[in-house]
Image (tube, rainbow, N blue to C red; front, side, top):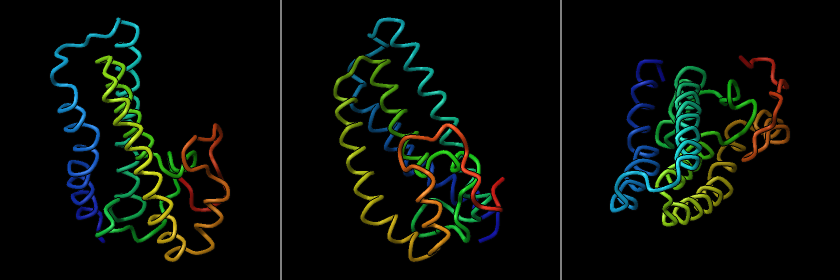
Amino acid sequence: MRKPSAILGSAVFFTAAPGVVAGLVPWLLSRHYGLPLAPWPLVGAGAILVAASLGVLLHAFARFALEGLGTPAPIAPTDRLVIGGIYRHVRNPMYVAVLSIILGQALIFAAWPLAAYAALMAATMATFVRLYEEPVLLRQYGAEYEAYRANVPGWLPRLTPWRGAGSLK
């Protein structure tokens, strides 16, 4: 896949997947709450969590298009295993970021339905990763993915970046 088509494909997938999961659905679940109802420290913490997570999510999507020359969408996968940038700290930064965005909104709106939705999405994402993504990546990238998986945690980021692969940037 060429870079322009990878960038366009990633942008479309960004709108279709995280845009719906972390944007549209939380809005639908919380729209009757109106303006933020939580005390200001929770609103502030939630806003920081949403903003930081959005930055991580955008970085992760950019890595797919620029490093992997593909998209996160299973129908247009990368040509290369994406293991640079934020991926040196955690294998699933997109999922972690999406869940953090949802939890940030739960804090902002003091909305327990959003927290419950985050728990449901976490279980769904973990199941998808375990049953689909990891076997596909292992088949596609073999020993390279196995070494990466052995050194980089899936869900809780490591503090220091993994530097085991020579092509990391």
